[in-house]
Amino acid sequence: MKTSLGHLGYCTNIHAGETWTDHFTALQQTIPELKQRLSPDAPFGIGLRLSNVASEELEMPENLVAFQHWLTENDCYIFTMNGFPFGGFHNTVVKDQVHAPDWTTEARVEYTKRLFRILSVLLPVDELGNAIQGGVSTSPLSYRHWFEWDLPAARDLIFSQTTQNVLEVVSELVRLHRQTDRLMHLDLEPEPDGVIETADEFVSWFMDYLLPMGIEQLSEQFGLTDEEAEAAICEHVRLCYDVCHFAVGYERPAEVLDKLKKYGLRVGKIQISAALKAEFPMLESPSTKQSREAVRQAFEQFNEPTYLHQVVARMQSGELVRFPDLPEALAAFDNNHAEWRAHFHVPLFVSAYDVLTSTQDDIREVLQLQADRRFTNQLEVETYTWGVLPDELKKDLVDSIEREMKWVLGVGLQYEEHLD
Image 1: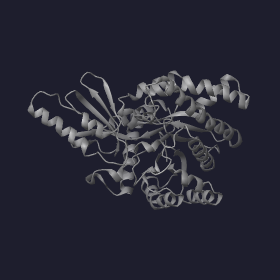
Image 2: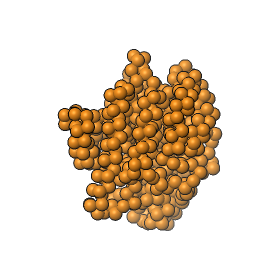
Image 3: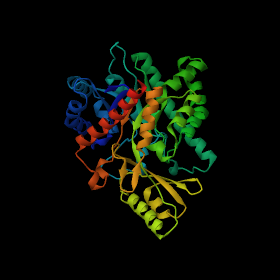
Image 4: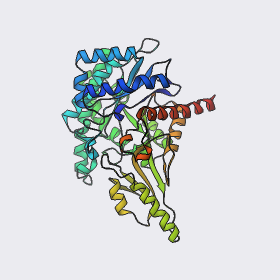
């Protein structure tokens, strides 16, 4: 839905299923009720997630036309898509396979190009008759633990291979923009243990690989000057700001945005999500030792086998130590650990989980910055872990999505009133 902070929707990766029939059935069962509750008198925005199989099926003309008709009949629209999970995302062990196939493969390229072709058809026009911009978020190139990441030559090879494939999609986006007047962008989503994990790594990749390789390629393909080619790359490749991911890495939102602005880089969309965090009491007595153990045990309650739950520990020295999953962090816990932040997309509207808290304050800060700076026009709620939450946190799915969206709308409205 269109809000004062931009287009807002929820990401449909919350729904299980891999075929287009699965996806469409879930939308038909949830969207009309959510629209009635949240946006009865205005179009309702959706962040669409399609598996590879579903994307192949939806691109069939009869399915795409039928979906367009359904969107129109229900006064809904698609403005962003999630192209990170390629295959199974629920009711299976996902873990590091969420990155597979990665950007070293042609399968990832073809899947992403297909999503953009679908999005170019689905994007609505605004009140002036112009198509709104659209984005597709994607993985941070690959998963670093699949490679000999400590070897510079290995890193250079991976960056070169993946960047060349990203540029194949950029070329497709330039062609689509010329042919259809649809301006669309690929939004890379840094996350813990991704090949691109932090804002600094995104900037370095963009400046050291994407621009040099891309300027040469686009200039040759489309007869652009170097300046025109650079502008096209910056237009079509952006950052997906997943609030949970940056909070897990202890990155401050304003600092991330300032780094991007310094190099002329942009945010494609905000994924509004929350992580788990807690500080461990200083070890001073037997009672504080018990309190520290209680915090560790509280994290252990969220140790489930479906998704990776990377942990970044802040040590007493201030050093950040990264663990690829929650079991490794639990096993390594000792007196030197001062704080943990865990990659677990917990509900936005809950700020505390017994002795644990969420990174909800980071969301508030990002929304305040969006109110101040308007650094994107796309916001997507992404809480997909409802099925693996502890039993006491599981609620009816439609009610849960409604609470997430209303919480975001309430926070955003507060900031708008403050600006006025």
